[in-house]
Length: 341
Image 1 (cartoon, one colour):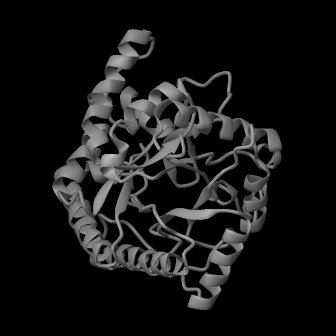
Image 2 (cartoon, one colour; image 1 turned 90 degrees about the vertical axis):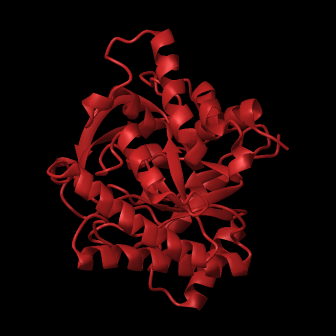
């Protein structure tokens, strides 16, 4: 099987890293590229990378020439660029998609910046496929829950405007389902947003195995739980099929990941899923089998690559070459089982 292409994410070198007490320092883009390039399993290497458009890896206001230089660096390591993550969060460029007019304006500015960078990468030739990832940029569900219908409507309106911007650039937006993002914190609320926007050609869903596992358990939305603690194997697969049947038709970007069932908060994130190493003994997911539920009919939705997400891995884990070989092996197993020519 030669498709989908296998990508590694660059943002594990950034997310949760920083200068605050208890934080580890960020890992540079070039070092993340080198760690990825060193991985090899039976002659197979990673085909590309997915990329977060913010400092210290990228200044989203970089000049065209600076961005072409970044593209040259990535290509020199043997990689294509795939999906891009727009800097939509407070503290980056953007702000809450359900906030004030000013906040929503910042959110849309971040989407425009991402589309501009995508255009430069596309014209350079470094990027031939992939989407631009967003979420509601509203941490936690408490404020959303004060008036859930009105707040979801506000998110839908912002996403419609963002999708219109993206479509003007020939891009597609993928909304990442994760339990810490308001209005996207359960499979049902996520579906309400996707159907409310109703622009599948311009805005779809980005499924992450670690995060969508928590959808089945109803964290942050017990009323939408499909499983109870202590579930049986048969109950799990029945629930998993129910969830994926709802969200798969919208899925245009896919993250391979593992989850140990723990939920934790980090910084501004309100109760989110814990990504684990691919071979974590506490991992709850049969990665290969779960991936098949999302990748069914993937070519119909123009999915051309899949990406590993190792968000919040400690630096020691990221620096260990065995980490990347184990991940690459998991990705190859997914492609062998569910890929295409």
